[in-house]
Image (tube, rainbow, N blue to C red):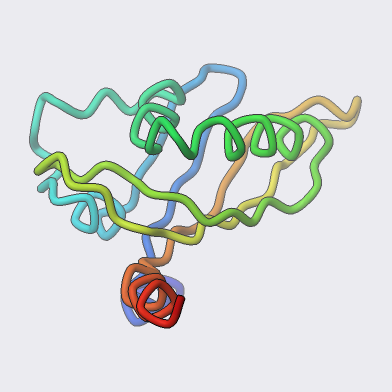
Length: 126
């Protein structure tokens, strides 16, 4: 059921092991960014996760993301991600941290949703 729901949502799932700084991207997440998952280009690290974010958006998104990871609060941001082609596309990212019994972050997981069409409509109205 979960796999079907994930496929139906058209969202990409990510799961960060905060302790090891390693990433898991669902097949849909990888596909959304234009990869197949077999490329040697993907490093599956938390640094790579940040590097995909547009440099202009990193200034706001990364500190907010880091705060949410540390304190366990929900994360919700709109930002651009770099596709395999080099083009940037708008996404809404949402996630939450799993903390250990001492309040230290273990994992951070969430979803990305392509919101490019909505952003284009909003831009056309301005």
